[in-house]
Length: 269
Image (cartoon, one colour):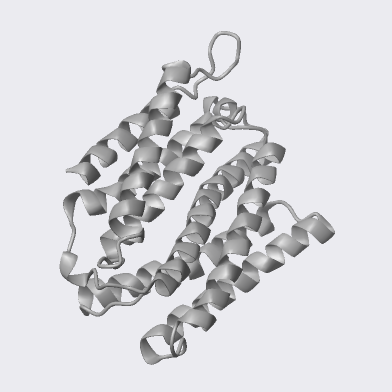
């Protein structure tokens, strides 16, 4: 019941933020409900985080099944969406990220298989949480990458549409994307290091493809961070490289976890 409530609330908040991103008569983005709505949204994200921490992350008798993983990602995305909506010009982006959190919450809201929630040690949970934090930053970054590509196309065509007025300036979008990329990269490195330290036989048969794809994705994001800092990388090629690295990580974690737990009935952190 709680998961369904969060699903519905994130959906409503995301819709309000997205629709409220339209500029008013002065050309400024509206804030539907103003600070009251943002306060309610903060309380919602905090309550979701508290529930996850108590019921899943700090519960030694509970593991991390597919629905739990999706719920943690949804919570982190909602927090990032809330933060984005507080930034000037990023309310529409924040609303889209919040809607994505709501879509992900549909999994724990309508499907949950406790038989796959095998107890995990705190070390394995730490490794999993580090991975999930990294993926959350990079999922939000994928939304920004998509928005940046859309803006780039409109600029190349010298085409001004209503949508272009709802998005932040391209330079601001790229700076925010660089921040999310660097944050995701740091947590990816921590997750990989913790995996080698805490996970027995990380190159076991059912973890081999996950490990290799994760390392390849981390290399791509590391190249993006270094390229941005050292050579000022930006533009379409950087965005395409970002999305390629993101696709590798999605296959590495969510694809493997879905196949193993949902289709094969096995489990890992």
